Length: 370
Ligand SMILES: *Cc1c(COP(=O)(O)O)cnc(C)c1O
Image (cartoon, rainbow, N blue to C red; front, side, top):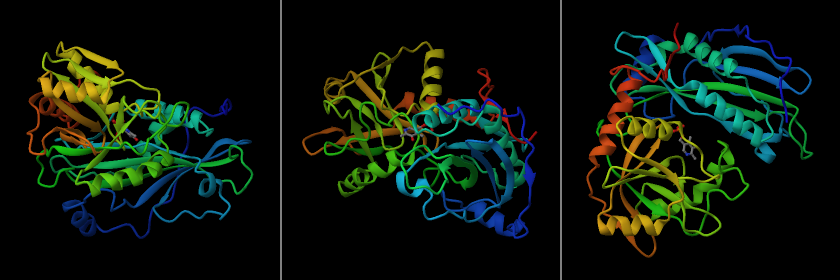
């Protein structure tokens, strides 16, 4: 295990500002219709790590290409992890993020699995504050918009032998994000049940937020599109019957007595959105079950009327109703099914907290611009 026993408790970031930063007018034009993941802010954060020197040289520098040796280990063996979170602008102009210590801890778990160094939680949160210090003006203020923040870490060492890299870099980039659903409403999605591909296997990397899981889901996602669906649903790799998750979102089923059921599995990426939504449901006195659940249970539950809603959740789309599950052999639900009321009200409660419209009784929000 790679540990950083000698790391100082705070980092002094070296700041070099971008002389070619976008003008206010250019920025405003982008923020008026940012889309998702298309535009990037003027700066990025970078912290180096080496086996000998631990974390060092924390910098804020102009956003731009990273120079890599062609033998950099990440390009060959995919030793990489990432996180995804959002900065929200509140009514008074202040900038906040949601449960960042959870992302920091998850990145540490991902790092352990991928034999990368663990970035201490304080460094992680400092790195978010640094990107906001440099690029806070990029946090949009229209309803349902945010600045998507993407921390990531990869093996930079040039070495073709197979072992954990001894040189690693951590970066933070940021990208303004418009409402996930164009037009602002919430549109239920159709999902394709993959029976050909698995997302992750027992003992594999399913619980780590690592690029390889996404690379291996792309053909399944393409199959979903080919079948007229928006997203792909994966089952467990051993028995091909237990629900796991979508390519990048967790799933939750709602029973008619108000119970929420979500798959429990070692190969699922544990979403912070899911965790928070389930906590809000428990606050309302609803029962929450984290257990194994089969695709047959879903199918029979919808047929009998026992299962009344289903939704997917993750930082980017927050909470998204699932209207239809489609497979080669059967369908569950129907494409024109409306969003469920519990799905919508949990979504609203969570986004109200995130945007500062509702009291944050759990202490989930962290201010980034002060
Ligand atoms: C990031 C991610 C999620 C959602 O996690 P959140 O913390 O809620 O954003 C779910 N599944 C996968 C595979 C992911 O990579």
